[in-house]
Amino acid sequence: MLRLAGKWFNLYGVCLVTVIETSSPEETGILGKQLGSILRAGDMLCLYGGLGAGKTCFAQGIARGLGIEGTVTSPTFTLINEYYGRLPLYHMDVYRLDSVMEMDDLGYEEYFYSGGVILIEWAEKINELLPEERLDITIDRCPDEESCRQITISPRGERYRLLIEELMTVVRAGN
Image (tube, rainbow, N blue to C red; front, side, top):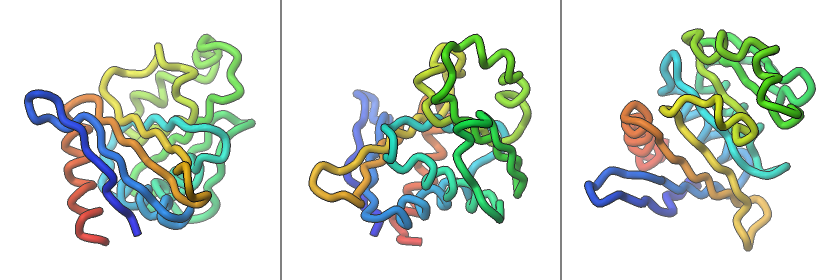
């Protein structure tokens, strides 16, 4: 069962961070699907977490929420996979990049500003290219349980703060 593990606010009552715990890969995918179902054109999701943390499982859920059917895999060797559903999903895995300049060769700006949903695994590798407004999602293993994940969601900008408020109504409702 998805569980709200915590929320942190600034002095003005604006939520800065939301932490949700999932107890299985399936639940991690369900959370991704719930988020995917409310995404809009131009949304950017940046995924952080170690190898095996569950980034690809979460990304698969995002794809399902966008109505994408079929196999969704991490583009570790191809760097970018494109999927088409309710909105296009541009799934990037930049783990293997040696420098930020390699993003120019990929034509990253065409993807960033294309009107689809952009999902970037290992986003910390290209931090200086990321727009200021985005949704940062960090997936960590829980210390005491192998299949448990702590998913820390940090909205950067008003659009993403509102997006997380909407997501939390779905999570709280248990859908």
